[in-house]
Image (spheres, rainbow, N blue to C red):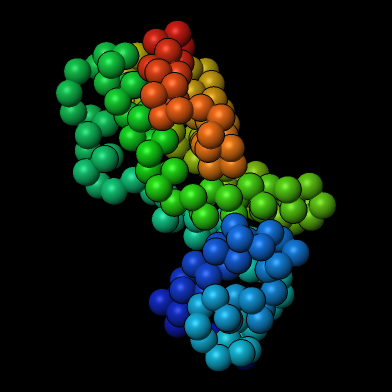
Length: 189
């Protein structure tokens, strides 16, 4: 019997995110999720049919948790339509994503796993494409400088910058990262 308690399901997915980030895809088991969530053994298997279902659901959960709040979304429409404003928003994105390191690391694990699991690849491709399209659409509607290609290049570059920050944190200083975001926007927008 599949359980339907949305709060418990979200808690199990949050636990799965932590397991993926800390143990990798091989460590993602029902037992590990139950232990991380602090629930009785067998709970995760009541909510998910198999590991594939957990992995596919984790991707969606990470994006839910990374969504900017209403104040950030409202701020996109406020202020001047300048490169400086784009730069400010890009700094916010990097900080927001980096503040949830296990989510981003779990997504990296899922991407690696997707190279071997076509169903997961299809789900992740759709979700990531929707995220990119959302960013392009919002940017174009906002009237900020830059076109769809600018947004795509910023999105790709900032994602890799976050990878570097989370996996090799000593590669660049915070000041270097800050300056690179400034330079990136200045050259692209």
